[in-house]
Image (cartoon, rainbow, N blue to C red; front, side, top):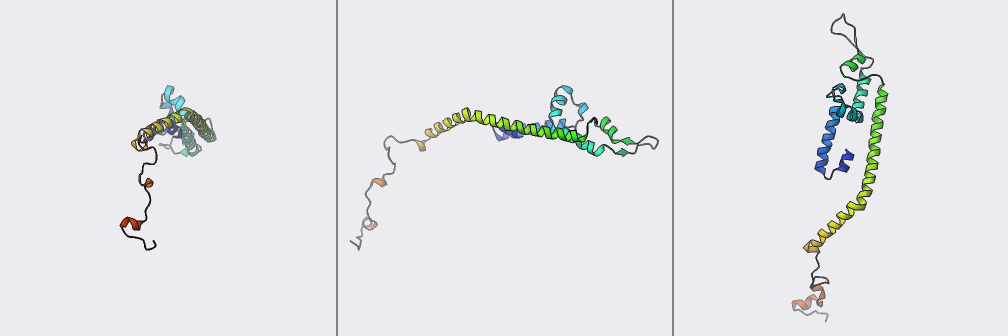
Length: 181
């Protein structure tokens, strides 16, 4: 989400794009659609393996289900093993352990963090060179166009006239004379 926030120009667009990103990651994680039912070309291979939620969910399922045995519907049938349920119903391969799934989650999160820091540092330096200078110039141009910041041609000095008048004591202004004089 921080990468998206650094890419988009305003807050509302960041919310919209971020919600879309989170929605795609939730759909491909395997909770709503199991991974064998996802299309291979666009959803399973690039997005499923980038999605840290999919790896985390698979690790959680493996942690909960491996080693469990469930009673069958008929007493004659053998007990259902958790590994079979993971393979057949959820489409999760149990070839690797839950710790590899945890390592994949940590690797993806660290790589996202490194990508964000490299992207933000490169974008800051490029923005610092071009965009900020142009924005600063546009801002100064807009400020100079405002009437409150324009200098009047007649009075180049301080616009108030009262500072140029001679100062008189308050008693002489009212018409009273001072007892000190």
